[in-house]
Length: 171
Image (cartoon, rainbow, N blue to C red):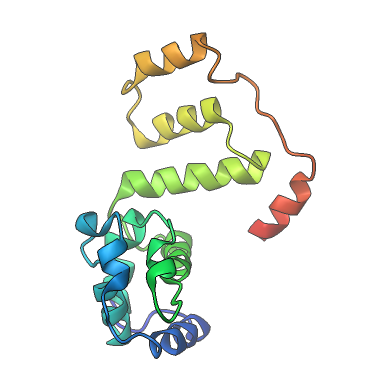
């Protein structure tokens, strides 16, 4: 992959943010997903600082990050790593650059599409779409049926009052 593929405005924003980081490691030590990442938060920032953005765009890290904000809350300089990851994730997703963590990418797409459509998650529709697009049609089938019969999964989605406000966010 080409080393310099990010648009200039994203590169500049990341560069300015990374000037604050002195690699103390508080972000990584607090990250609940660090063990699952190929580049935990501190390494992720270091790789970006070294200009290895193409490696980061194809990494598992951007799809494994849960955006829990723990790294951000622990950082003494308030570097918003989840925001950087979200920007990179959106860039990769929009340009279809990575197939790493494909089920997670599908989950991400279905989740955002659900929010865009209804302004919130419609659990039954969300689960159905994820099953359809991920190819995991029958996993958790009995659990889903059990939840449905207990009234935990609504058949029809409930839209929020000002759905257009949410849709503006996606534009």
